[in-house]
Amino acid sequence: MDLLTVENEYFTNGYRAVAGVDEAGRGPLAGPVVCAAVIMPLDEAKRIIGVNDSKKLSAKKREFLAEKIRETALAYAIEEVDEGTIDEINILQATRLGMKRAIERLSPAPDFVLTDGNMTLDIAYPQKSVVKGDALVYSIGAASILAKTHRDALMKKYAGEFPEYGFERHAGYGTAAHIKAIGEYGICRIHRRTFVAKFWDGRERI
Image 1: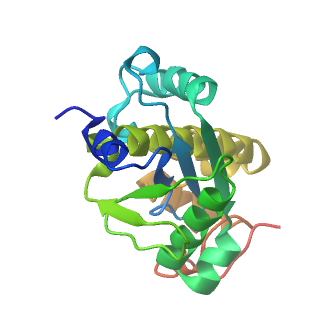
Image 2: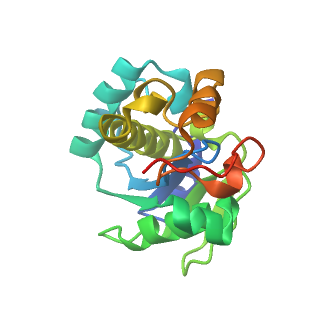
């Protein structure tokens, strides 16, 4: 399947600014969920070869493509929703909130929105969700790359502040090493308390 097929279908039906939306970081024990929205040009001359689900790409390839996407996009926006909000409203609602904020920051605004997975958003634009959209739809794949690279860079910064946890290696996901570190040091301020409850003894890193 051509990754531009979906956007081109909407273009044919009169939509000229189709945005793709995706997130990175729904599953980790620490750090924000990051959502990105992007409107890509559909003309073949500006097409970026290699756009795909960010999880299927090497870190080096993601960084290369992210730079190309930022240079080429008609509009893009990236939003972070922090761990406190995730704990307060749950990860699904936090993801919806981040996607909504990213979409509403796009300039020019979209006239149609494509989201990854099965996600209905509280937005003023017509929308459609696409299961495995990050691997099937060009603009959603581009959004997944922007979200993933932004979040990975952020977690590397947190690794400098909280070196005990190894955030630069696992980006906050629940690896054995990360869970072991929580057992040794307690949690730090970027941990999601609702995510670590099963193996957290109540201690916090000061």
